[in-house]
Length: 211
Image (cartoon, rainbow, N blue to C red; front, side):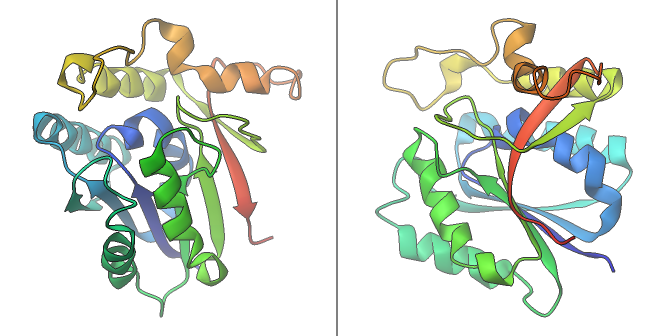
């Protein structure tokens, strides 16, 4: 039986960096795909909408997108309000899966999203957390391979962003300095799946899965 899918993410760009593999592999299993981004950030909005059009065109299906419009780095201050806004968007009458940030993450906004999503963990059919560049002690148990075409789209989408447009105190860091940063999942994958020879991977942690 098909169900709804909810990506619940902190920031514009989190989807392209961490979630495309899940979407490419699983989109056909869902009646409705929803992307809820908790924060807003004006310099990225137009880029995200263009990327969203490209992604929708590639899979041939519509993605329901909504920004909850909270300021970055203030999720703990508005925790209950964000939780309320997200829960109101979930249709509890229809089975659903959640993809969100992992608890082992250095970014406080990511951790807040994880805690909010965990509040409805028992109602979800499947619950998956994502690897982000700020994850620590991440313990993946799922790897999703990307085709050459899918990986090309991922790179094109991420390359639209610029660290200079980040809401950052230091302006230090990167989006992706070389191909290894786009393909972090492969390094996780190589040891435990030595018989597989795909070129590109994303990595996830499944917390709950219907068998």
